[in-house]
Image 1 (tube, rainbow, N blue to C red):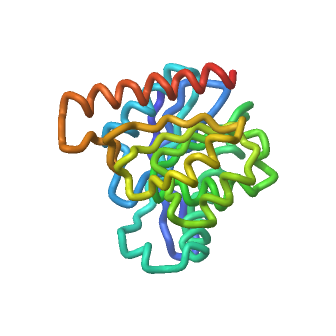
Image 2: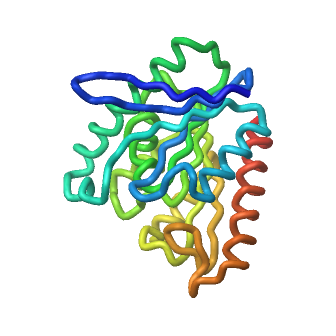
Image 3: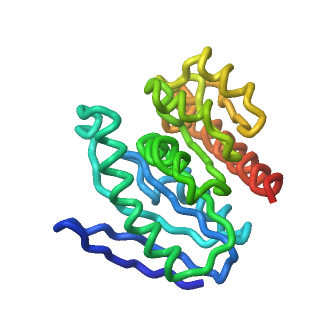
Length: 216
């Protein structure tokens, strides 16, 4: 296994990314949340799940804080998509991957749903969406109109858990849904309970691996 940290400079902006290479035939690009980094449990174990299921992994290290949400969603999407496209293009130009997966959490689901899912280049890509921002209508509408194989994980205590929207998404045959009772936006159990949160995390990873095996 090789772990390489690389940088791309564009328009006076530097984007770094970590490429974990095992010689796998497919790659998973990961997009972190505004305050949820790749060292935190959901990404740490998602990375492990991908590696053991024959995916190389790319962590893209963009840097945005909560202030980004003061801007219109279309502007947020444009900024993030421009940044991640630099990395995606470089990785795919330098490696002949046969399959592509995109995994994002919270803020990181915005470029997947409002950017990548609408890009004909990634018609055959698969998506894993952790706590997507369903309060935004364009995120919800993007999921409803997408035909990509996708797996969504969201907690019932998440402020983006909206029952009517969840039900509509559940009716789509291309999307599998893992709804976690008592879980918040970090998928921790409320009231805070370390043991149950760890058990929940194990369940999330098991369902994620099941999704990977079902889509081949």
